[in-house]
Image 1 (cartoon, rainbow over the protein chains, first blue to last red):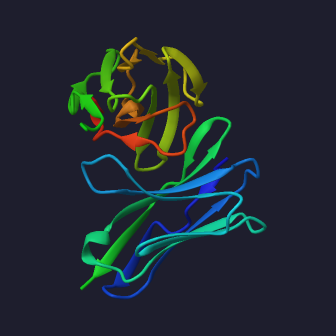
Image 2: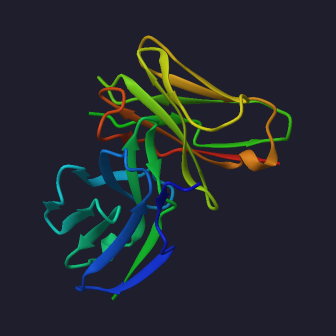
Length: 110
Length: 113
């Protein structure tokens, strides 16, 4: 049973436009959510996080939105740049540590 | 500050063998977590160690085990390797157990033939 779902395996966005990556979760006990970015042959790199008591967190070009009632979070990247092309993992913190989604491969088109 | 290091980076084994992977956390970090990444399952949590004690365990068979040393370095062991154990094994460190942010190493790519 997948508790954290990223339903889009891949997403293609034009450079300069907004990239929106989505994540759904089922466990209402999750209290903290994170986004990681991963390049090939490297480990995931922490990008941005949000506590369950907030609904928005912003860091430069990256904004994470949390909708607790819908058990949904999203990552917005504005404007998208070529270096943003990577796999993005959504993660949620619960009693058993971090649970990750399967990732979304973001491709930024020139 | 040096990042998380994992050795070896690549490993090829045959079915039935056992393997030990090593992880050195960021200096000052006392928590080490291990994950398995496969194309079909994504990142799956194996276990977390803090102060030489296993704090959390994921849903993996007993063939997967780990330990942490007094200097916070950690090893994971997989016995009786199966083809399905081929994966990227990632180690992550954090300051505390269950910390908000984990810092990942580059991973060890294990191939089981």
